[in-house]
Each structure stands twice: as C-alpha cells, then as structure tokens.
Length: 423
Ligand code: IMP
Image (cartoon, rainbow, N blue to C red; front, side, top):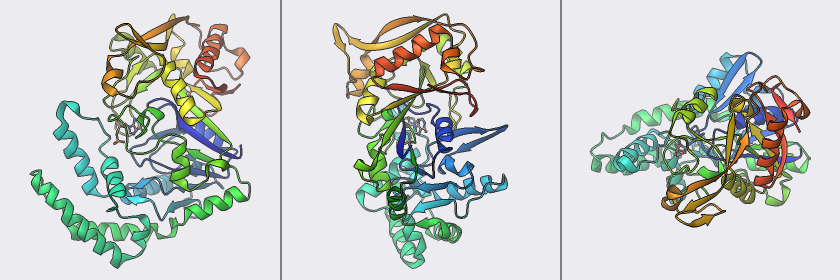
C-alpha cells in the first residue's frame, strides 16, 4: 500500500469512512489533511457504529497512529468531545493520536460568522454545516488565525485571542449580533489546551519519518472533489483542498512520495447543501434512493439530495486527483431498480459538454445526457466475490470504471467491513 491518498470523487458522503476502515488494516498511520468537524465518517465495527468527525478512523484499530495534519482546522472543544466519546467506549487515545501544531484553531466566533453569513445570503446560501469551517480558513489565509501550537504558550495565546475577539466583536456589532466574551473563551480554550497538550506536536516531521521508514501511510480525504475550494462547484464548496493535492500541503508530504490514489464514489450520486447537481432526481425516485441508501448527513442529519451516477463528474475527479483505483460503494442500494441511468455528458441548448464547466450558473443549466442500463433486481449485500455479482451489476460497474478512466478495485455492498469485494 505504501503511501496512499483516499479521496471522495463526488460531493462527499461517498462512504469513504468504510473504505478507509478497510484499508486501515494494512496501514501504520492514518492521516486527516483538510477540513474539520464538518466531516462525518461513519464506520461500523462488528455491531458497533462510530461516527468520526475530526479523528482519523485509524483510531479504531489498536496500534495504528492517527494524525490530524496541519491542513485541518481543529475545534479543540469538539475534538475533546470526540476523544471523550471514544474513550468511554474503550478506545485508547494517548500515544495513538497526534495533532499538528500548525493546524488552525476553530473558535465560536467562526461558527457564529458562518451562521450570520449564511443568513445574510438568504436564498443564495451555501448550506454549510455551520461548524465555522469557512471563517476559520479565511483567518488562516488572512494570516490572523491562531494555531494549535499557540495553545501551548498560554500568554501568547491569550494576547492573540484578545486581539482577535476585539476585531470579531466589531463585526458582530455591525451585523447586529451580540459580542463574545474574551474571558470565557480564553478560560475554555486554555482548559482544553491543558488536556490536548500531549497530543500536539510537529506532525510534519513525524509523517516524513514514517515515509522515510517505509511505513504504510493512508491519507483520508474528507468531503469530496466537487466540494474542493478550487475544483468544486464554487461558491457551493467547502473551504479546503479536498482533492489529492491537498494531502501534500495539508500534511507536508512531498508529491513524489505518493504511491497511489484511491477514489471513492457511490454507485449513484448524492449531495448535501445547495449548489448545482445535474443528475439530481427531484421526484419519487430520488426519495426512494434516499430511503434505500439511508441518505441523511452524518454531521447535520440533513436529508441528502439524490440522483443518478454522473460520469462527467467521475472523469473529472479521476483527472484532477490522478485516481488509480476506484472504490464503488453502496451498490446494494440499487438492487431493486429495474433500470439505471448514467450521465455521460451535459447539454445546454444544443451545446454538448463532455467536461465539467467551472461556472456554477452554467452547470445549473446543464441537462444530463443519459445512457440506460438494465437493473439486476437481485440482492447483492451478502456477496463476497466479484464473480458472484449478477452479470448486469458487473456490466454496470465495469462501465462506471470505463467512463471514469480508472481501475475498479473495490466494490462495497453494505456498511460492514465484511461487505467489501476486492476486485
Ligand atoms: P462547510 O464545509 O460547512 O463550509 O460547508 C460547505 C459545503 O460543503 C456545504 O454544501 C456542505 O453541505 C458541504 N459539506 C461539508 N462537509 C461535508 C461532508 O463531510 N460531506 C458532505 N458535504 C459536506
């Protein structure tokens, strides 16, 4: 496996958590490199279900190192809550989890700003998770953010926070919102810092030592390619680099040390939040997919928008991320459908697009060009070998891989680790 990046090839929620969990068996280190607790990775281990937001799923495997890299934005209170929840279920954290000292900190004023900006946008809102992710990255880029390393130097931390709260309270007053108390924030964050201190370290050196020693390293992407700040359907995107390139900048690993990129995609498509989604089914079929696939957000519980597989999106993802291997998830959700459709291009008036337009307004106007497939109408969730799959399911999967331009390597037919077919 060597150094592997796993990314979402659609709009997030592709079922990455489960594939990461399967691949983690072979990994020594599992690394988050972007996003924050806007993510929600659902992992089922035996009868137990875990939903992880910030901590890499490596934590569920004893003896593996889990790393939160510099490219992540960390809400220390949310992290502690996640740690407490895992510890209460017997998961060992000390010595198994490290957080980069260069990762930026998410504060309540980021969450409040996130919410206020969404309110101000009204109909044009992004539909964020309201976890303060956008404003935290904005501070990072504006060079006014605080980093996890600052938490280790209390006086400096308090001084920086005082300045930041003053600045943000001016904005809140202008927006007609209540100012925040510096003293309360300072107290809460310094208390969190005491508990997190043993975990905060120079993860860049730690990870590069792992690369040097030929450890097996798995980078787990959060969100998905179409939510990437540069390559997604801007402005309906998240604020980080959710594509493979983000792993290099978000963890400090050089590009030439990456051996493999695994792209995870559902056998159909979903999206939460606003923004263009050409193959969306705003009808009973969409509702049926949502019900069959239990398509509700792991972080916010919001119903996901559902639609057919979009090969324009998957081709684009393969190109942007350099995907070698495809993992197709939730095949079983399609088991009962007599006919399936795959979008192979878009049309606006008479103009045909075979690649993804970057203009969200144009994408909104795109109508899908579909190819139709016969459904297999047979249960698949108990199958363990590719050859056992119904012929029509194999044809469908092979075509998805061909359309996308990468090798089909994994098929998932259920939430459990055992429901994974290696092709
Ligand atoms: P933010 O990341 O909270 O700023 O939200 C920006 C957009 O990304 C919204 O459309 C969210 O619904 C979407 N988003 C953020 N995190 C996830 C995720 O983990 N899965 C799917 N969508 C996400």
